[in-house]
Image (cartoon, rainbow, N blue to C red):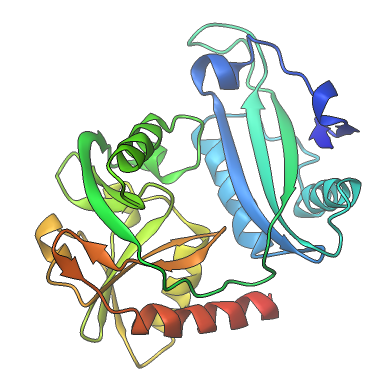
Length: 281
């Protein structure tokens, strides 16, 4: 079942025009949201990021788009897919309504909410081998547009194809200044001693929900020192640990980058803290 502009329909009946601006111009933003037994994880952060993304894209935000209304819409699609007591992954996409060419005929929007089951209620630690490499064919441009989740993800798609063709589990993306920005599907953190670094949003890094949660956790702990600073590719092989964060997986430790193998002690410790925060809401 799919929520199409507030109406729940069967997936095969959920149709968008081939002239839809999300398809024609990538004129769309989205949120990937984790729901556990009907509870939306980190909902406030998702809501405000979605609103910020719509503003950056100069979309008209409907007066009905309150946190309560959108939460109700998400919970209804969860129930419609019989996922009320299961972990689920939600994709909430907003697109500008059809019309115009590069210049839109309107700033009004439509939306689609879909749901699919997930295996685990909370984040599990994955210590399986996980090898990464740099993707250098194309760059992420620093600036606001790179910090939001939009349908313009060509670099991520091409990087994912490169990773699969070369038997890597993931790749790291660079910005135009040749600094490490993020992974294909999440934010990157680097551990050296008791210092943990992550690229700043100003470098073009996605304004990730789990990134924000970990930043808040790290600011309150005395175990580590957090630095939001640019990361050079040369620093990667000198690190003790690397790990990737996103809403679906939580924290994914990296085991190998080129000839360097990494520990996973810090990522394991932080994952337990993240799960505690998720449970508390």
